[in-house]
Structure formats: structure tokens, C-alpha cells
Length: 331
Image (cartoon, rainbow, N blue to C red; front, side, top):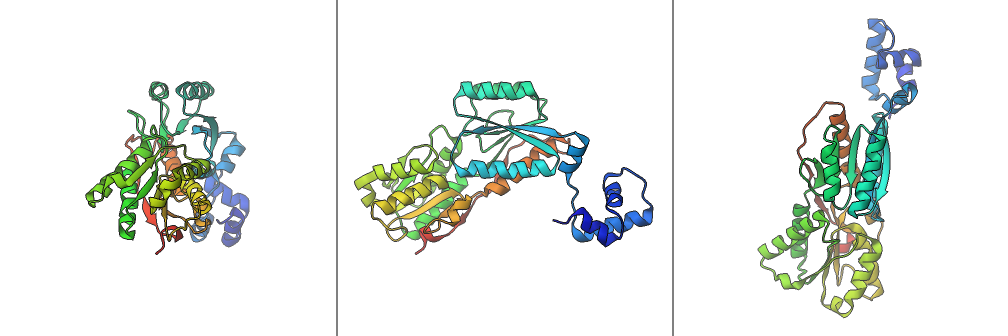
């Protein structure tokens, strides 16, 4: 990204002159202003909103309620979300909770007491108590990221049903028919959407749903490992593992290796999320990508636009997933 010093050098003016043109803080002659604007356009310079806000002491804040989780997808989403906030002059504060309703409500009351210009919710599911608090705060822009759906709370999520269908089609193409599905928690609405999409596509292809074994577990590496190890002798009949998040898939691949089976020769594995680590497993992990960084950036841009009054819509927004074929399903 171009720096203000480079703009000044190209326009043959001082850094302070560039600053005055960008911020409109002092009169600059039309000719000089034109030179600066031309340099900005040539270099693609973007003013640092965060720096301006810090100098003016005028940071706006977004408070985020985040699930306590070792799933890297959540941390990658938060990192991308925070980067957009900082660049736009917003301060992101984070409060971590678990899935219990009482904890969600307590944490949200704490955030509301401190006040914020917007709220972002990144949880496995939104409890009824939390939804009521958010509904009562309907004057403050709020968005739910990958947190299911609840009336009056706009959500930003991937098309999980389609993602499940995409995975099922790939297994069908590979000729794999006996599938172990690591499905995550039953209360997690996106996991259930992915599972429903997988099952529907499986049936539409004429395959026996009884050949699909479903195991529910937390969204962690260790849960994927344990679920696969616990499959034990039954794993001998499995030729595919569909994990509804990459953490489960990576844990499962470790267990498959420990049990003496080969990926993908004997068991093909598909994950979901496309976390950074999925590119560095051995073999590399085939995954249904919803791009955590793109997801986090787009969600942050949406709520900031709402806070600024540029977009007051409350409709849900869907990220369309796509399959990334890698080594864990290579033939």
C-alpha cells in the first residue's frame, strides 16, 4: 500500500500539503490540489482512517461477542474483521463466552453497559436470552457472523446447505460410498445445514443413507481425532470422511494415519472452511472454502457501512462456498 510520503514525492509537495488535501483541513490551491489528487490516483493511496481517528481521539467502537473455541476459523474471521475496523478508524473490543445462555446474556449486558456503536456476534448459536437483549438494542447496528439466524438480527454466513451438497457430489465423483460424517454440535445451525445438504444430495444420487455414519462432536482437532479413533473397527468399512469443519478433518487425518490407513488411497477426506493450516497438512486437505478472511472483511464492511448510515438494510447475506480440491481426495 502506498504511503503519504510517496504521494508527496510524486506530486512534488510536502507531506502536510497532502494531508490537508486528503482531510480538507486547510485551503490548497486548485492546481496543487489537482497534482496531489493525480498522485493519489496513480499510487492507489488510501488515507489511514485509524491514524486520523487516533489523532483526533474519535475512535468509534464495535463490540464483538465471540465463542470460546480452538477452531482456527473463528480466529481468522476475527483477525480479518479487526483489520477492516482499524483501517476504517474503528476500535474492536472482544468479549469471549461459551455457548451457555446465562454466559451469553451476562457478557452482552456488560458490553451494552459500556456502550458501542455496533455489535458483532460470532457464536455457534444465539440463545433466546441474547436475542432478546439484542432486539431491545435495536437502535444500535448489529450483525451475526456465522451464528445462525434469529428474527430481527441480520446475519452474515455461508450457504452451508450448498456446501454440504458440494461435498457429497465430490464423494460421488470419487466413487466413495461409505462415509463417516463428523458433524459438529447438533445445536450448531450451520453444521446442521451442511449435514442436510449432504444428505439430500446423497439421496438424490441414489445412494443409501445407511452407508453414511454421523458423529456429533465439538469443533476441535482433538474431537476429530477422538471420533475417528472411536470408530475403531468400523473405520475398516469407511472409504470417505466428511468433516464439517477443517479442524475436525485435520484431527481425523491424524487418527486415520495412526490406525494404519492411507489418505486418500483408502479413505478420502473433505474438510470445510479452508483455514490456513489446511494448505500445509500431509496430504493437503481438500475443503469446501468459505474463506475466513473474505468472510470477516465483508462482514466488517457491512456493519461499518450500516453504522455510517450508508446502508441501513437488515437482510441476511450469504457467502457462496466452493470446493478446493487438494491431496486428501486426489486420485
